[in-house]
Amino acid sequence: MSRVTQSLVLALLGGVVLWISGFSTSYLNYVKPGFRPFLVGAGVVLVVLGVAGLFTKRKHDHDQVHDHGHGHGHGVAWLLCLPVFAILLVAPPALGSFAAARSQAPALPKRDPGAFAPLAGGGPVDMPIGEFIGRAWDDDKKSLTGRAVRLTGFVVPARRGGEWYVTRMQIACCAADAFALKVLVKGIKAPPRDTWVEVTGTWVPHTFGKMPNGLIYPELAGTGLARVPAPAEPYE
Image (tube, rainbow, N blue to C red; front, side, top):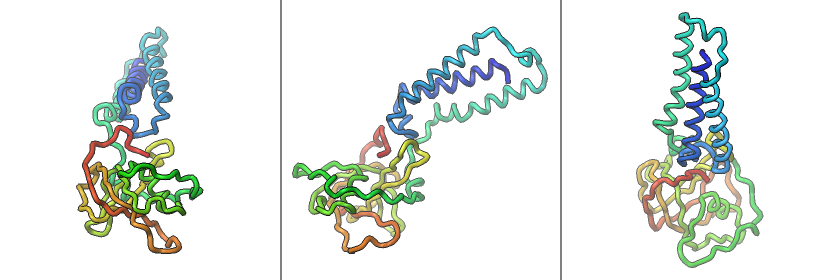
């Protein structure tokens, strides 16, 4: 692979990283917002290295040799660029129902019951799905009892016909470590899979004393539903 080709690949890769992190929000489909400065910095470094390589006067000896392997090296180099073009032209979406249906959420750490602040106001409370799950399982004061809440997420069909989950993926740093946070919605017909919605309702208190074995999702008795655009930041 010639130095010119290497430099073009570096510059192209750096330009794509800069574009998705510095001039759009599509990087949020892959990493948490706090990683933006690092992505921008990495993009700048790659572009500088690529441009510097294009204008350098030093050449390796093999750059002067025109043989069959030289053309093959160019072909391999541009094949390596295909994923870069894919990110730029057809940006993969955030993880959705396909990943959520196969995700086994880890056991969330128990919180001190006193860590939950009182719910203010009389109308529906906008609440992250992770907080709803925490209050449903770990809040000894049962602060969700009788309170209308509004959860935002995408639709994942349940295995039992007609039931569905309002879902949000949670990540620690990037999409590779994502797992699904799910709340079972009752009383509202399931919208199409992967539809982003705001669902309003009240918590259905659990009737068991001790948490049964297996993965159990808290339930919401739905009273209202609205379709919404996918948020710029899709993960919790």
